[in-house]
Length: 327
Ligand SMILES: [Zn+2]
Image (cartoon, rainbow, N blue to C red; front, side, top):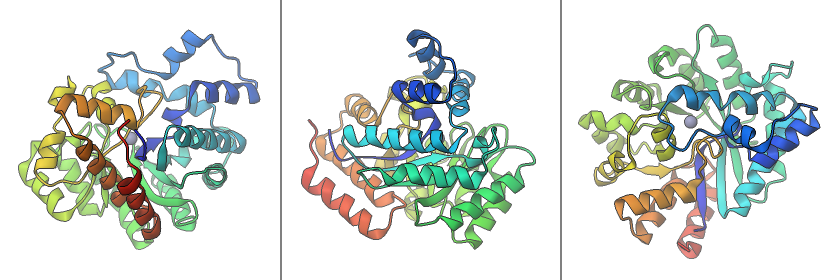
């Protein structure tokens, strides 16, 4: 399968084993053996637990606390995507989680933008604000930086973190600020929390919804998503890992498609979930007996729903229309 696009991909959860080893070596950080390392970075195949899932970010995050490391990690991830047949990607990370060793949020973003520069496929960054207590200033700084580097490597902002603990509605002020600054944004919603969270995100002005998979719990919300043409960034395996669904056959993607909701298929965290967009699409194809045309339509949705400029979107669409191959 070629012409792949990922619109929902966290850098820290997607570093390959080789990249992790290289980053540890450069920084003189001692490493365990391969088996131990895999356990540290990937959830077990039958993981259905959010806590186990979240633990897997600690180690890669600790390796991404310098400018060199962040640039290297971003560049390596893009090289891997290009080799796997991707034509575009939006990589996201939370600059405020990269300040443990004194790097500023702004320096972190500049380093990641440098990592984009060596890429042979077009790519952009999404900067995540974080759900937490008392971090309004850090989130505001993230939005300011997104505004400064908008269309210069950054394409949007996001809200990430524990949706179950910190309701979406608590972050109205920060996204009101993003709107005033003209920064487009997506918001993780309808993953750990239900339809109410997605309603808040839409009301706050989110142009896409990260996951949004629990929107089906409220039929009028599904109608609203379809009418407003707000795309969902679906990440099936990640939702299985965190226990949102017990089995892929329960995954409501067909309900959304039939209701006219724009759905895109993404990997969320390639390493933590041991996946990529190709695997996600193949999983959906096998489970719901999708045709080649259905898969192509999903990729076209991704091209059109991206935060890239209109020219890039047009090029991506043309590429998929003329080059897409299932094999
Ligand atoms: Zn995510």
